[in-house]
Image 1 (cartoon, one colour):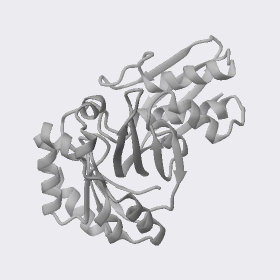
Image 2 (cartoon, one colour):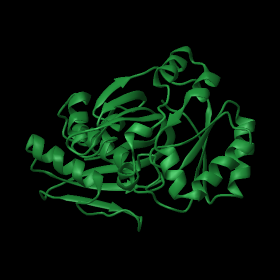
Image 3 (cartoon, one colour):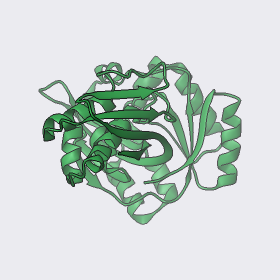
Image 4 (tube, helix red, strand yellow):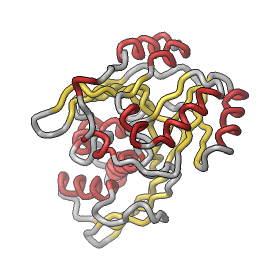
Length: 283
């Protein structure tokens, strides 16, 4: 049997770090929403009790380091599956970009294996498995728009954002989330107004949403990678309503209400940055 799963990227409308945990991780509060930029996951059952991952990317491993592999392994262990699975990943989401590419692949594998073996496992249970793999995986299991708390494992669905376009620009660098989090000084952070963003989502108020988006990791990444700062400045000069770095970066996005303006910003960024995308919000 062969089946397919779409694995959409995410952007952060907010990313706040509340405190350092005793286990070394951080308590976070993040509003995330999915966008129409996605990897395509193909799952095929095989007779041998093994996990195979294939993809065409020199930046992504195909062995047990791959989050999709880890998701398949965790699923098989949890439910005692002795049948093997071959996972093929067609990458469209940039790697190490702050868009949740590896996490959404892992989430798609959990959903897909649930379908592959017709186990009818609730989404909440899949998300719990996902939390053992990565902080963004539980959100990616659910998709749409939600706030994630704790380490990212506590998910509360939110109203979908107002319809708009998203221009994404990624410089030719990768950013380590671990490295950025190691630089956090919680006491000195300027926290985004998460409740105001939630209100804007409920009201479908585009300009209010843009006015309150925020990411406490942005200043840290901009200080280490000045090319990210240059991209953000360029987008702001182009007149985008909301400009923010997603996750730990380095991708910067702008929210744009009208397609014609979004296209102009996209065209302008194409001459400034190699990886630029123009997509819609899905969440």
